[in-house]
Image (tube, rainbow, N blue to C red):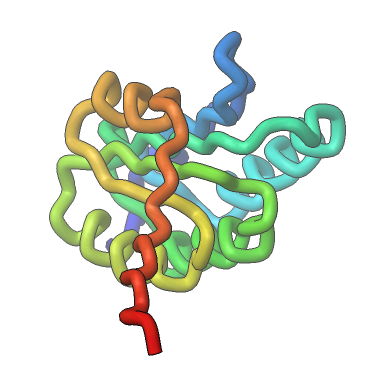
Length: 141
């Protein structure tokens, strides 16, 4: 995804009123744009250590420089202890496939991919359910 002659994209970073760290990705994303967004996220997390929900909305992405998705997932993995739940909103099969592959590197984080932002937010805000499998009772000796 070359990007020559394409305007730079933008990653809006905000903490919404429900306590979700939101990353809205727009346009053609370059490394510098993503790194600036990571710095914004880090500063926000320094001020709000109690934030444990992450929403990444890529519905308006038009493309990205090579390696940008990997940089984004490196940041997510480096901060994996922060997250209880994470959701990505995308309609791109390639973005969903890459995201799905990297979520395996986030043990303990409930991560899902959605094509609808409202569904992603509902997942993030849903009550926590114990997903640990129950042990079978052992027969008496």
